[in-house]
Length: 131
Image (tube, rainbow, N blue to C red; front, side, top):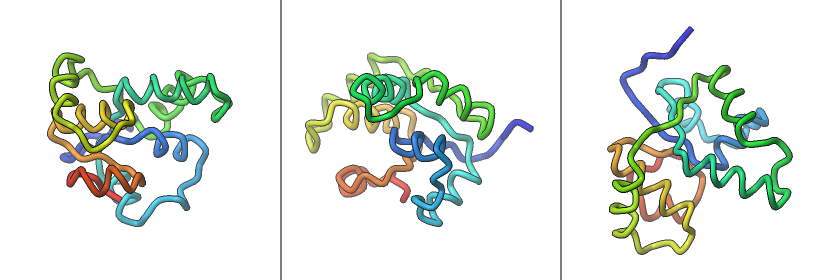
């Protein structure tokens, strides 16, 4: 059954990995509720970061398998925000040197939604973070 929720949330990279691995005990109750009650999106940048993690051996599953599995099990969708809009917004973010975090947060800002993330730096600097 497809989701059709009023709320949309984006998932940070580690959230995608934890969901794929079934590590729901890592999530706060607030994050779990947001996952259960929202349409779930992931940035194309998350796909790229997953590939990086695969290449350096931090994850053992190819990224497209992770995304396809989650798209079937939790109806995860890939976003289609234009890269130019993401870069324009990322140029305004100066609180992180992590390129992936910068681009993921920029995309979520452009889309005007929330981001589920356990990352303390993101939580401290991006008020639309759910955790």
